[in-house]
Amino acid sequence: MKHDVAKYKTLVFDCDGVVLNSNRIKTDAFRLAALPYGEDAANQLVRHHIRNGGISRYKKFEHFLDVIASSKQDFGFEVLLTRFAEAVTQGLMTCDVADGLTELRERTGHATWTIASGGDNSELNEVFARRGLAHLFDGGIHGSPEPKHEILARLERDGTLQRPALFLGDSVYDYEVARDASIDFLFLSGWSEVENWQDFVRQNGLAEMHAIGDLCETQRAAEALKPPRDDT
Image (tube, rainbow, N blue to C red; front, side):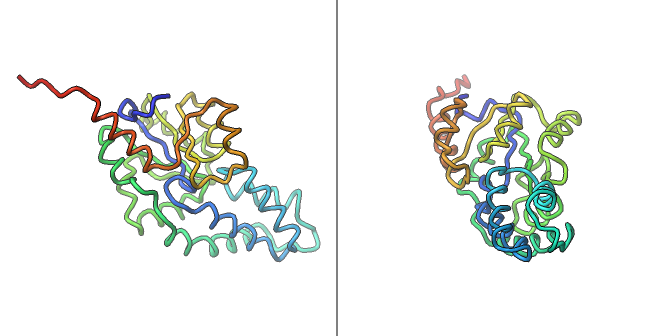
């Protein structure tokens, strides 16, 4: 896959670890939410979360209650979600936004931008609106509980997702979603929590960059190499 994004009609972005530097915020929030069940159970949930980056909190807490948690400490699914959301909200409002995001939007004005995230849909839309980012994503901001593969299928059915399309993600799940949808994939490694991501990228033959800012640099270079227009 060439790094010249000019050919793509749609750019699909994951949120955590791609647009926002929020992976650590989510990881810490999972641990905090599960602490009433004990430190060991909370640490097991964290490990499950990291191994399954990009999958919604709903699925992860279901796994936690079904597989990890002791029945002696049943605080309930909704309480876990509430504790998690309370821990996450402030962090999402203050964490770093990817450098170069606005520049890349300007350089891809022809393309539709959309978010397909494992984060909660309402939470994402509120955060992006409050942080002044929502206007960049003319294809909408979409999150859980709808899984990413269903988000992409729905967007293609309604005409929002046009091919060729590129998915920018930072997790194994992001890659699997893009692969199953036959969409090009770019792995962004800078904020990723994938262990041994270099092996993952190499074994799957993936294109990789550190962050969105690097993609801007390659786009500037690609544009500089284009021959001047002959308007005569």
